[in-house]
Length: 107
Length: 145
Image (cartoon, rainbow over all chains, first blue to last red):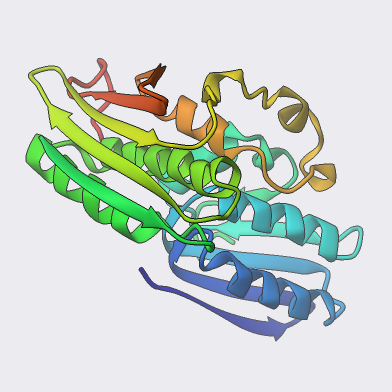
């Protein structure tokens, strides 16, 4: 089970591309990057989700962590989330505090 | 029927063997990708909860059995942890709190119960038995994509 995440910071946004499967084992890697993003004084945290194939509740804990670590007022945006992963996010109400956009092009 | 035994260690890592187990069962049952995803997520969350809270991170065994009949696919998860019925877990307070002010955790069992078509819990021979069911027939209008 593989997971990879890379961060790119530009124009006031920290963009993280998530690839693979986000579960209890891989969640600490994402949390590390969230901490790094929080230190960069950005105003948007963008997660590119189109290559994230699986997300358990460990991924939801990462979203809580992101809310807690990012300074107040930083917008959290998820782009291109696959339907099954999006269903988990909506089912647990995280779409109330996160902007979900369909594709990289429209984002 | 297919079966496997997970021997859990302190890190509670169960996702990989569960993905393989549910993947094999799903292929045999010809579940749609969405049905297979829902079943995997539910089994993963129940087993992870057993590892972290049932066995509190200590060594323990979780037995998985899976079966297929005309109408449904089922997975039975058994463990030797203290008695616990996942249906007694109330996610209400966490769901009601704004996501930004939530405690981390506590939503895995909710996800498990919401992603299956039927769920039963029994205490049998001193073991917890959780049975998760996915119906093979799709509701009208659901293409399974």
